[in-house]
Image (cartoon, rainbow over all chains, first blue to last red; front, side, top):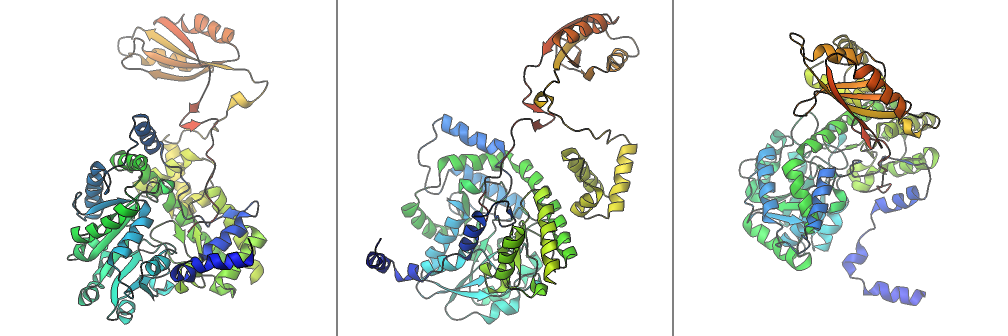
Length: 394
Length: 166
């Protein structure tokens, strides 16, 4: 393609899209993917294959000819199971016909939630470090992201002070993910409670990404929607990817008050129509019979978390105790390197891939995200290599 | 160590009994001495019986062997029921497993290993069928092992994930 036509084509892109930064993970992925013998702690998905019962349920639905669209909001049977499940596990209650919408991954849910509520110039508070899509999706919806910082000293929890100090007349909503990617941090009911007066005072809407809600260790996940008065102002987002090892199925859901949900359903029905039927069939099986499989996976993540956190501390990298998800987020500040330099050097010299923390926002600077969703054998090797690497630096 | 951790320890060892106590200790957030103590106690109670390796002999050349599952019908004896004959069958080293079965038209299921079919056949006719309380036997040879003790012998899950994902 000639330079002129490249320029012409580029001019055709919208100013918003043109202004979006490419994901910082991308460059790293290209680098790591081009090398051989890399041990990757950079994978943000379970190392388990989807349990056979879910795969089998999906295959069987195909054999029986379930290949048509489902209702826009997803199969009612599935929404009923989601309602029962959320009530039983997290004490939140949503009406299956009016308050639950099945989406193509939690990613779609995040997108339609933001698009449904934002007018141009509305501000959305984003608790960082966080998943890489929040900022671009807010911008695509016409909103303005305003970042709230968290620190290792506070176990990456959101404090009332930080929340209040960034609220303006344009602030419409706040979005966060707990248990958190990339820090593994969680929020307790008491910690949520401390934020409620501020959320109420400024009438903020909460978008709570609870995709890692099942992956907690030594404690249960507390959903902010379960607190008194919070259901009305919360859009709860979750899905099957992490808990049931179903990332490639692309299946999630969003729960909210009927009026809000109706708004999201409009976008969903015009852009997506419905989530894939065969994936919904697998999800139905997951909720009905897959909890045992999930518990076994959670046990294994907990053991590996214990192992790697101990490992990082022994290497001399300060690491807070992640209570959820499958990430450890050690500080590399003691090495004097930036997160990006540390990650790049580590990859080149020891062939271990980790993700630099600043990819997830400024608060992530000085940290690296290490996923422990990989085999014990690999974790052990990775820790050995990292120990060698860190000792050479000091 | 609490009961829940003890169960976890057993599951970990069942998955891979070669994990060292230090690693197990880290995974279970217990000092390694605690793990050593717990394992010793579990061995003492005969809950942990042995630490064998699962070997796929079919992949080993020049190691011909056959396995048979034999349905054995027996007359139980007063006072000792099936135990006496079952224990007697257990003593043969070529016997790999002995189970008392419900709902079948036979009583004991015996798993037998031998170098050749002839060897197995001769064991059945010479040793097994001649035991006093054995009424009848039916021998089924195993043609192919797909899964053994919860492990698929030929299939290994590959990691198909991309190297770095958000």
